[in-house]
Image (cartoon, rainbow, N blue to C red; front, side, top):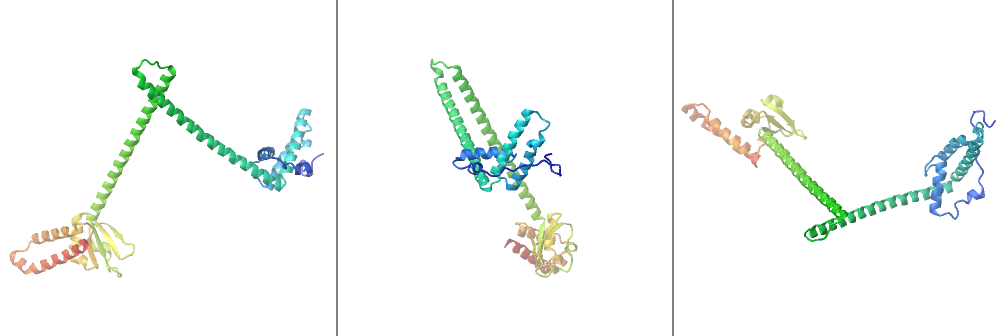
Length: 319
């Protein structure tokens, strides 16, 4: 008895009455917010739920306090369950009305915003009070320290305040000192990293050679043209490359090598002192040519032409 064929107890939705329909009339915002909190709380919900959630929660909670579920309990528990059953039905009747539910949700939301604003104001006020108290204690400690040479007696409270003020001042000084030292250490580390990075880039530039071939790439593979190469970085446009050699001399020799120059439109060293390096290499090659006087007299024109061509390539880099 009291159960459907499905085995679930019946739930009864009370019809709307004029008392419930006009319950919110004449009620202030605080009363509406409190009523929303109680009504939603009876159903185990929070303000802002939809009609389907309200209906599901009502069915679930009403089964717990349904009269058919209280047969095995004593009279006191039955009375409590009956009272809760009626309150749950009244809450459901109130929240099942969309107009009243919207009004209650608005009141609850406004109350929550007011509560948060009040908490923020209280927090700011407490912070202001704390600062005023600390300032007062510092002034009192300063005045007390000025009067140390007089016969004015210091009370235990004033002595404690002075001690606390001194401890705070020492703590603030130590914290400022630690902050300054940490900032200085971070700045030194950053300068060291930047210097190391700049040196590494400069060393790599002295071992690098930039070649350009225009729209038509060289027929020979770049790795076959150069020797003792550490890396070859192609440009994004696909018309140039930066060749990084294992040492600086290999880069200079490649810049002077006519067999290298014939494959490209432009060949130049990547360091800022490229012209000086090329000139020094040309002079060194001329001095160490190993020709005798007669052979050198016949090859002077060729050597000068090679030196001039190499110097022009270096000058193009400087320009």
